[in-house]
Length: 276
Image 1 (cartoon, rainbow, N blue to C red):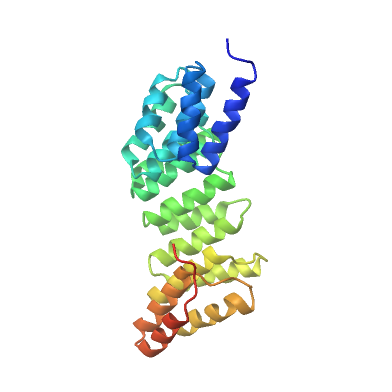
Image 2 (image 1 turned 45 degrees about the vertical axis):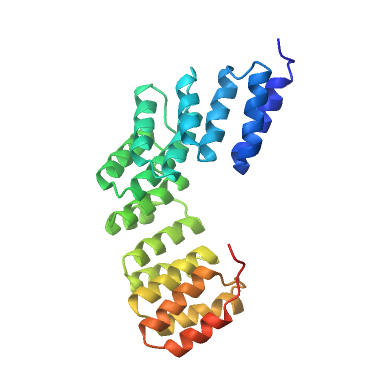
């Protein structure tokens, strides 16, 4: 029999691998589980599959998932996220359906993960069905679920529904505002995007780099040069935000769209960012 400390120790190691996506450490830990004869333990198997999924190794994750007797909601969620991150959207939906058919109750993390798959697959009809299940399960007021619904409807081009979800939210955070701004920006509705951004500021929410990317993109795609340059200047001066490559890309595109090529060239020469 293994020492009683083995299971909690390896559980912590697998949690570390899952959180950091450290594949070499995961492979090492898996090997030790086999050597110590505890790789068959369902609790560790579940964490092992989840860790492989977080590292994008879906073949290994899927195999261990199928060997696991107690397939928890946590494990299903990890598999859905893993397949979605690898663009295996159909497989993500298969895992979601397996969860429902097994009689286990999906949670807010389940819905957030499967809605992300719906958004990236532009599967509006499936997204709507999931929204119905969310309502039945009584988690429609959850802020994580609400934010993901906004993104899903936005990416699928159903902006009225995205706005309805946004307006009906009991509580909003910066991600809520950013998701709504991004939904409008994605479809070239610059005025609507900037209106939401100004509503956000009036509500006392300070912008971050993510929402400013959406704001600048909205200005770019709508040809709103003056507004875009105004927000560009405010980024560092008023909000203390560091300009990143995606911000430069939006402003260069904005200037180029308006024929201000010399200004765009000078901006490119001034770019400062860490290489990938």
